[in-house]
Amino acid sequence: MDFEQAGELKIGQVGIANLRIRTLDVERLTREMHDRVARAPKLFGRAAVILDFGGLSQIPDAATAQALLDGLRSAGVLPVALAYGTTETERLSQQLGLPLLAKFRAQYERADLEAAAAPPPAPAPAPEPARRPRAAAPAAAVPATAAAAPAPGRMQTSNVRSGQQLYAENCDLTVMATVGAGAEVIADGSIHIYGTLRGRALAGAQGNTTARIFCRDFHAELVAIAGHYKVLDDVPDNLRGKAVQVWLEQDQIKIAALD
Image (cartoon, rainbow, N blue to C red):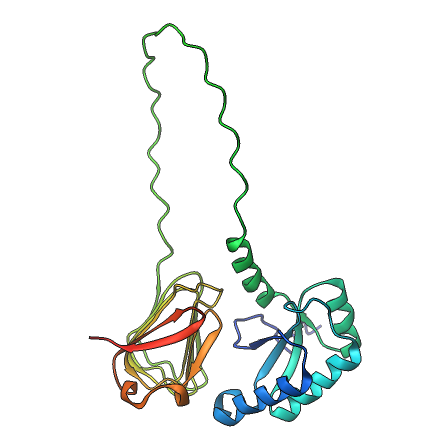
């Protein structure tokens, strides 16, 4: 009997855009997406998009959600899933015939948890009554434990070519060569590129807003930090081809030349 599979299924890191719905206005959302595609068709044209209704107080009904799907498709993108939320979201996904993905919801919730007030400290224990001093017993030998070392960064010494995607999980990414047009480099930490950046660079992929991107020769199609992005058309001409750093400040992408 032949046990070889006809198709090999693997789960990997993929670059899928997440559309967090903040105002449920189908016409406005469609228009905004149309403008994004028009400004950067190579990036957003026929791009896979996940719809996240977690920012709304109420999940839309199936008819409204279907109208949004149709509008986004007409704008040039391809909605492929819903971001996991509540049981209502799961029911809606079944009505729309779309899968649920939980990855992006966790990123938003992490920020909410970090912003939440810490629980009040436990009351201090009452002081013990004074005791007669005794000779100190010899301290037991405590085995020395090394401090937990941070995860080593991932290093890429060869070019990242068009169509390739490189992901550094829970660490920084250093690329010693060129990131070609159509290539994508992703890191949960910061990204350092010592060659030319012509493709996409996405730092802070799991929501780290302090991550940065450093590049020696900047021609990026897109840069993003913690989900906030900027495309090349939005970058001033005087920064193209320069050594730059990219960071996030008050939810806005900032780019400046390195001295």
